[in-house]
Length: 293
Image 1 (tube, rainbow, N blue to C red):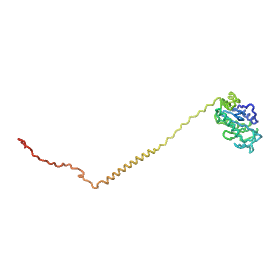
Image 2 (image 1 turned 135 degrees about the vertical axis):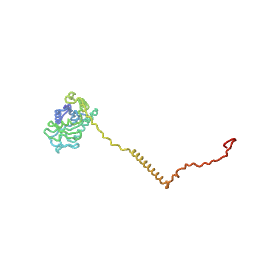
Image 3 (image 1 turned 180 degrees about the vertical axis):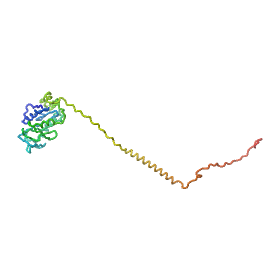
Image 4 (image 1 turned 90 degrees about the vertical axis):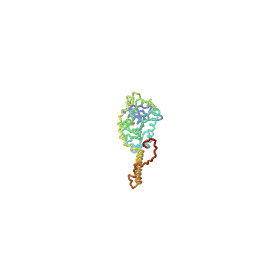
């Protein structure tokens, strides 16, 4: 990892040991030590291919070991004793870290750069040979507490590799743009140094996505007849029943009005005998010499 210290910085013993840990870190990264971002002085800003993390480095005032208990609002304790740090009381450490993260995000946003991959961590550096557990715990999402020194820097290395779940998007060009956006261009290494340290020259190609399996839709259930169809069927059925009732009534009325005695054939048939025709005799006029008169 590349480490750049602001000229004229006065580092504490804990900060010098933290720098020694980072210098031995084998993975790519850029640590800017004691930078000024906006109106805030930060202990460290670390840029890796996965993102940016703001780090507060705190040392112990005396040898303390045991179980570390932290609160986001109150004082921190170790084995039920107050945590004695060289920077003073432990109350307010979370607020101090959040202010540093906010300052970095604001500077990036003013430069129209992405700021959602900015995290923060408090690194406690105990005396060598002292055991403090747990070596890592989370205050809240995006804010962690780490215990590390040159004897045991395992959790610090794991954190720097995995503090962001994003892809490896910080290329050489983006690291240089980030330094410029934070006002730290004078601390930025050269392109060759970043490339040799392991920063990618360009963003990796997105992984090919497997074709989604074709979804077979189940056959649609038979549709129920509409209400209008049901109503029309009921109307037709009702009219048919009504027509049958009318026919039945007419048959009954015809039977009731018919005569009870049967009629003979002579009553219902007409006579075909022609009526007699009377002949009127008129006197004939005879002509002279008519033989038949």
